[in-house]
Length: 128
Image (cartoon, rainbow, N blue to C red):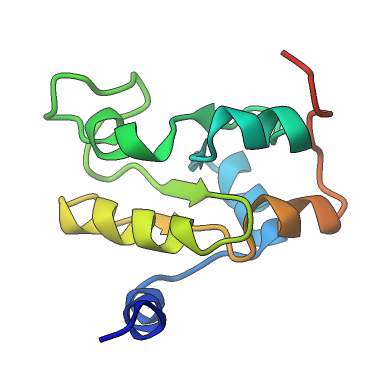
């Protein structure tokens, strides 16, 4: 299998959200997670209120049983919406969260760039 085939299979199992759907889901309690590395956030900004958990820490921070979870990881029913820059790595990340039992995890279709292009709120680059 190629990465393209794997990505297609992973995405087939996710209910990916467009920017406006994700924005609405957050207003109804979903947790939006920015998995991008610091250099991308510094260059492009981020989404106000998004939880910053870089990709290499994601499973430990989101799993309520890990011992290293964030306060938002209240239980396995949390609606996690992860995003990266363009929506590729986030699909794989959401699938990984589902694989550890976080069954409501999904990702933002098109990532941060789609959110920004939809005209939704963003924190300007360089903002602490």
